[in-house]
Image 1: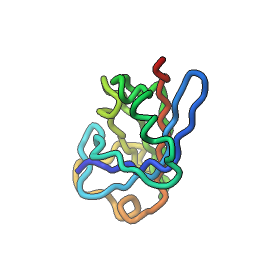
Image 2 (image 1 turned 45 degrees about the horizontal axis):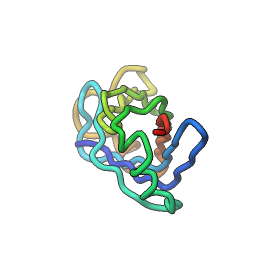
Image 3 (image 1 turned 90 degrees about the horizontal axis):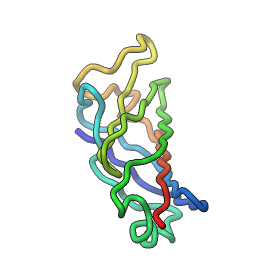
Length: 125
């Protein structure tokens, strides 16, 4: 099953827009990386309507950079896609440094509440 991303902060610079929030992992991990299920809104998102109107998400560009932080020592690796939200996150097991096998997420990942994701997009002009 895909993961969900709850956006709780949006920041803007002259050239980039960044969204940050919490990842929720549930169901089954797909080999090769799991794709996004949904972007949800929460927290400090007063600029969210403008974000979709003026951002690279609206323009259809993929993120320039991403930071994935997972609890339990697991390593999340960003796998770029061709659009703003069709990327994947590949998860590596800390004990073996190998990708998780396809199947149910380990309890250390599905029960954790503090996974986070930060995406940087080129700001539309």
